[in-house]
Length: 85
Length: 209
Image (cartoon, rainbow over all chains, first blue to last red; front, side, top):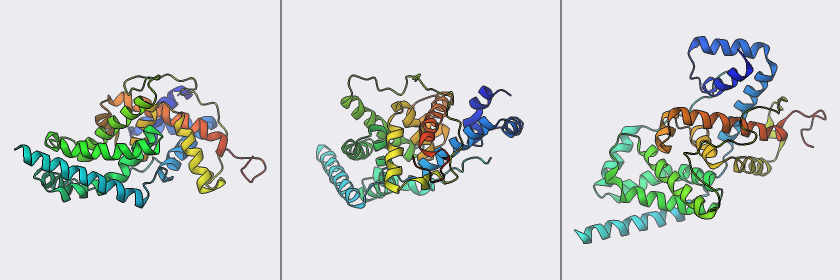
């Protein structure tokens, strides 16, 4: 397996979406190709860092304000719908 | 090396019951759906728009649109996937308004300069996130993802941050499964490439330049 072929399958490999045969071919490649091992390992860390980062969490006060604005608009929409019947 | 563990999904039956109740006029059932997904919608919106005010607008507009169009939700997909589709469209509209000079489309298969050939192949520190203070780390992550084309960061946020499956992401974005996979691979590799300069092992041992 060439490095470029390994890269093409990287996403499927990290997502556990490969059949056993392809998976074992990839793992054979990883065992001797240090560069692909590093790319695979650091890509996995990239995903984990973003997933665990709590980037763009909704603060409680803003959450409350948004929800009440949404619900007011939904009530208005419902009322309008009832009036037009 | 083990695969990334997927996030565990919410029970679907309970959700469908809430949708049915909301369709029947029960506004508080809809409020439960808002509570369940407002954080996710906000994260997705801010990842796409990269702007806090726009993200706030997207949350309001997406939920209101979902509420007004509940009748059209037939239950073929999960309610969340349907809501995400609405939210992504609202977020992309905001982005288009803000950057009319640039094309913002999910259909476009963007080729970028760095694309997917890895150049940075240095090992990272064992605990890269501990090299920086929490606020610095968030700044780095935010700046890094901002540099990706919108179509890449949208796929990345749905698949890897929100934990949607490839099929659900394809459904929410109206893309084919191969298109989702191709964008996801390139998004992951480009983020990895850009983060490498912050997280690679340093000779000095303290991790910072």
